Length: 419
Image (tube, rainbow, N blue to C red; front, side, top):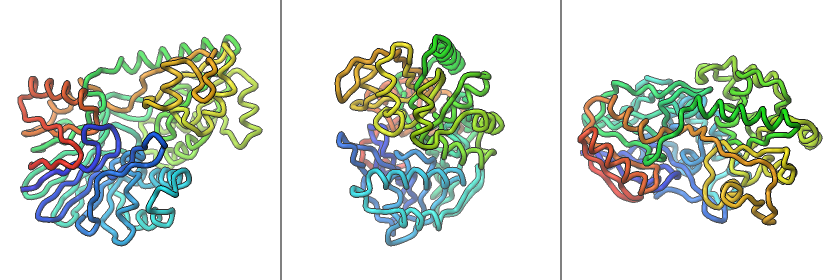
């Protein structure tokens, strides 16, 4: 009988690593990193690469791909992902090495070696990896992301990875309805909460941006390089925002990759419109120009931990005409969380006079979304919850048991669940 071993994302958000095992062989679904309080990468539990028939990377966020090159140092398991995930992963892994190289067991050459053996897989294609059959399915999280349906020993196991079941500026809702599976390994990031309607968030954000800019101020939007920055660009372009918009950091490089893979973006023309109309920051002279006129600056990182967003933040924070609009989750210990909770610059404790707001643009589904997707599947006997804090998982588990009458497990890292 096959089994699922949780190497990472057990009762925690991030550091994903899900091993499906049978007969001493395995297929690994994601292998990512999280970071400690010193910003050093933390890996999932160990797996011997020579015991793997394949590795699936569901999307390019570092908490799903950041540890994967460590599996390709001495052997080369089959690597499966969508073409866009492979391209963006290279960019993200190079950046990880640049920032954390001394703490990693691999370098850029390892990344290149890993990607050189990768097999680009489209949605709905079936691929054999040893005794395992894998199919990637559209899951609505970010461009190029996928859920993975694994079949082995007559059992079907669906790993949702991070997913979303609402329409965004970049993505259609997840397309998982009607999928037949015995077991579901589901994310539970927002297992105890529900997001406000997306259209409501978009309208509130756009109204707030206009208020600040029309009053002569500038808006800083710290945004994740992968997906969130491009979504904000697309939103402003769709609205016909007529004031200057600058974008800085890896937001631009990822946007270029999205434009090069238009079939993975809901409205590639809208993204191209944003890229052609808005101003890309090329060096320090452009950064100074961006600060001189009312407008919007979209910059990584999304949590103000570093990158160009921190540069702009320190120069804009003291002016009450300006605003800092956070559009990404702010983990504890980050400058973004300190800003929201204490209203100060973390290093100096200097009060922030700029307007500060947070807008829920999450690309993760919520409690209602998980329930909706599970109800649309066929044949589910067991649900395994991962990628969530334990309290949120308990709340979600109660709802699943009540509404679907199936078994639910919430394994810790290192636990094995028979499926």
